[in-house]
Image 1 (cartoon, rainbow, N blue to C red):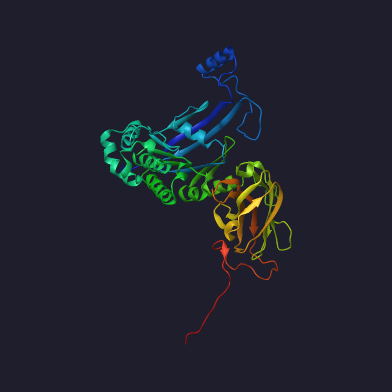
Image 2 (image 1 turned 90 degrees about the horizontal axis):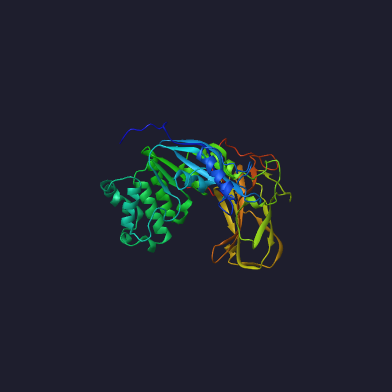
Length: 435
């Protein structure tokens, strides 16, 4: 193995911004187009760039949007960095810039080595060519010789699991097969920097686990991985550093656990404030048919609270607005850790009775049947169609709350310095003397 310097910077992003104009591409007049061209030709800033324009999908107005604004960070050799952000935060734009699919409006990106990117299903594949031909095509794009590609060919096929279809045109592949082959090609043709987008979500759980292991192996060989995902468990498991994007800007960069907390708490009020009303920015998915408008945690005294005692039972209360009659509905409530990992999951279809809602307002109560260990938690909830699995409304992280170490009466406290686990088992011990 060739020795490598882990401290060496292989990717440097300096003052990078990317602007798009909504609607027409031109400025509207020939004179303005020529003026813009003259400024850009001399390396000057676009004279028609609107000051203060940001990537905020919730606000209308303005012809321009800054998909990315003044992005700065470095990535070292052998590092696995996670890029986190809500939909529309600018993650895909950043990856397209890194992959040289498009150029930044301002700023510079300095790369040391070859970049292989897996951004969308079938990225870099020619649909009319076979899997075999596409492997050689991708290798050639990366600057590899046929001999180098042949050396890795069998390993790529074995990893992808599509050997039976390798001489079939990829246009006949399923999305899962496409992802398998695409990742295998990108990871095995030895790029210095591997860029992987959320596309892995298409693959099954076994393949995702295989991919995560491969990315760790790639980083262990001194190559760099940039990983984008909404799966916080994968980000936490794979990365040591995280960058959080919000409305086209970096809102946090640092330790991955701090990055995950910053991302999940982006729209959350301080723990001293009870914020139960759900805003549009809190939703990951919504179709407009129904919405969860309020989420509250009700303590044993029947009051809304976000600080509970040890072993205190509580109720989760939801307020729903139904805008269109919906049937075969499943409601879900989830308790998650401060890192967004699932602790416990409850769903209304568990009793085999599917729900139907007419247009109107509803209140739902769910009594949590478990005792949580001391620690920091939050809630997630969703409305979905039971048969299709399609989400109607989904809130992934809301209403952070804390379980204290002391019981309500104050006469007992969790006895250990380190809390183990998240759910306390029922205290039912049966001890028998055998002789």
